[in-house]
Length: 161
Image (cartoon, rainbow, N blue to C red; front, side, top):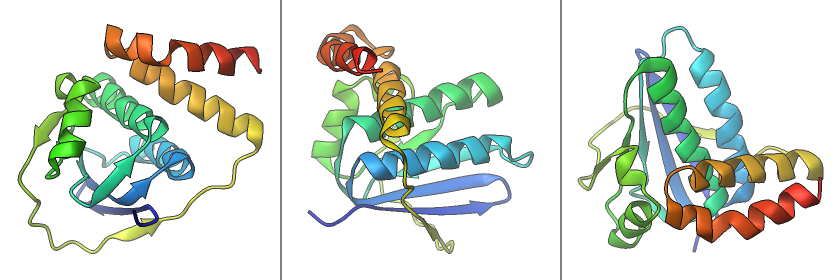
């Protein structure tokens, strides 16, 4: 698998995030920070997340995407779109309950916008633990299967505080 990258673009308040390669913990934290800035943008109106180039994605990054949907529905009253053209990634999304909180599209995007790369962030171990904990709490809130899957990890992270 190739190292993960996150490409971002914004046109007239519609944000596009393209996750490429193997998207792991550090990139999840970068997305989390980006989402804070995106939701503060007064011109923000929608977001599409393109996973067609995603080879792998960890649970922390999935938890951050769950937060994206929760916040979009709460703050702007819309359900974001996920583009997933890989059956393995789509299967993971559906298993985690993402089909309940995103519109999942299995056709590739045809968008020629210029995208910039979102850089990784350097976090202290405590900041990293807090972000991992928040991401997994987001996943647990989606369904009982996720709650069972991640409850031991969340308990361990809470105990290490």
